[in-house]
Length: 331
Image (cartoon, rainbow, N blue to C red):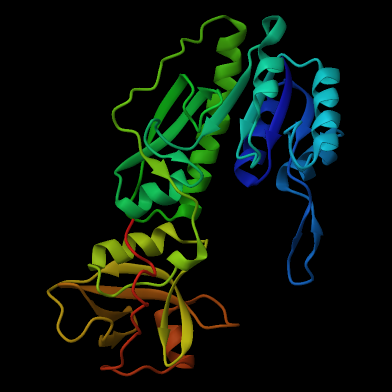
């Protein structure tokens, strides 16, 4: 098939690479404009754009696709590029721009297959921007991928393919992201094969079970020791790598990259250090103990606890600060 691919980060690049390897003709790539990144804040192309350029695939980077929006000239140029591509289908994965009605209509005309989205959850659960993070944060036992026929709603279109993936206790957003990206890449190749054969069977999303995965905000990072240890540990896993769970000791913000639930009920005040060991720092939480296993000081590296304590001696009885009311509240 001739494919237009719309995507931006690594999650999308994996799918683009798989479609290219499967022999589909990638007629056009749509990706977000280059962004400042790194210590020098130099403009950097997205992962998807980098792959496209390496394989001589045309790239368009409109700031918006709204013909009546702030950048109508960008949208008009993109519309012409989409028409010129003469594609059979548009595949969308973590693109970052809303597709207006004209895109859906243009891609559905003349027997085309429309716009297919790779969504990292088992819809209708976790529609929205951060399905992987939120699934870990609330303790879901599984997630997965849904290949969806896009409509104007937020992840509301008919489901075409759906496959589950277990969430392990050891999974972070970083590790689960890679598993979901790999599964999504496999499934979109399957979906295009089935579409070519007329074998896709659209299934309407049920109204029951709809949840929304709101975008992850930096102000969710502070750990609130008034919560139970299991909730705190899930947040550490969910916010790895972004925004990174954090806590404050003596005015210094410390990132927490690894944690587990400790044994026994807590003593002491919320956030108080109960014990120090090379295996972890025991901290009092609500009716429970959280064991911190990997930490990072400002400007430093992520370190296992044993190494961290050598450079940052702590004492039993010290207390991590509690975030202000309303900060890092449970969703």
